[in-house]
Length: 557
Image (cartoon, rainbow, N blue to C red; front, side, top):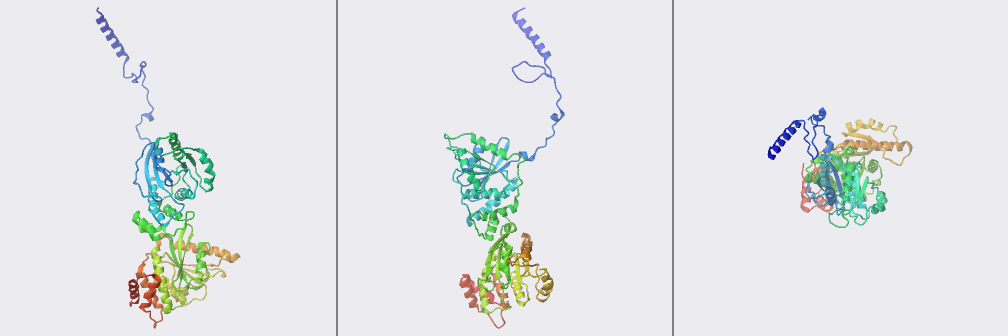
């Protein structure tokens, strides 16, 4: 047999031998080692099952990080450092003003993060313009955070410099005001190319003396991506580790968002250390309505409620203001010009709500003379314009002193409730100097029918109080009781959904002055030129406008 035939037979035998060893149970693993038969093993049912597994929704939900600090702290480069690459902006680059922001989507590990690069304060306090610029930015940011489920982590980015009031104000703005102290905050100190932990060890105690305490900190090299002798990849690992540590599932704090948080944030923003802003409510409303497409009702929530207090001299109006405020803000001595419709404005706050109180002089007699009527012209004009700017009147407080009732009380009731507010604003009667009554409400029980039947005075509610704060013993307890009573009524009648429609402007002024003429004695008449002169000199109106208003007032109704 030839050599070729023997080789062929050998190959045939080898083929059948291998074929006998093969089969469906042959292991299909690949490798360089010998192949072995692997018997088939039945897998557990739970592994073979193709049913979908329950997935924790929080596990795959992006974590929200708010990054903040002054301009130049290199916040955007910190985002790049965390991402490990250039990242695109998810929202358009906004103008450079407080509370504006842009957001990025980044991934590392097995998690997705949404980073809000937010503009903080550039100075320790805001001016009026900066405050108004922050209104729509803050509103949009809170709405977006609401939609995303809140905040998981705050990163405060600073450069190594002296600790100053601006840094503290930014800490307060985001940690205390926006997150109400409920969100962990990590301090990131960038641009420490020549120094690392030594800087933090030197300034930590000073940082905490400002009341700024952080959950952790990280000192890193330059974050601008430039090559140099100080560049290291350890920074990326360090910052990512801290982010993962403080955004782990189960650590997310409760997020209190919505309009209430926005209102609270903007109120507190006005009172940053050293700040004492007087921002017009109408300006805030305009910003919200024009920039954020909010309704008038929602926009109005941020403004202070307006209260007009009126009554005769000596009724205790200034003491009533101090009683509500819980401190002395109004001077109780009559050092201002005592003429009808003259007013003094005070801003007070209690239970977290701001109020503007207009302490207004009413009538001292049942009738006006020509001089008193003309004095009321400019005061009424200025008051109505001011109330227009503030959005109207929320509540009338009619302050009287316990004693003999007279027709002047009825005239003041008509002057403010009927003439100024056209019966559209709730009115509460406050009776003062009742500290010697056995039970202060006994006075109202005795006099209520006289008010309603004799004088036609009907009120939404009443408060029998003492506003004298320099008494001892039982009287001091009654003073505190009176504060609770008045504040409760103010809150009851100034809730947002009870605000009445305010019709101001020149039409309101003309109508008011026409009705006020009813308090003049019949033979007396007011000359048009005197009204024109008063409006031009006291209210800075042009001759044409003054003449037009005077003519409208003089017209027979």
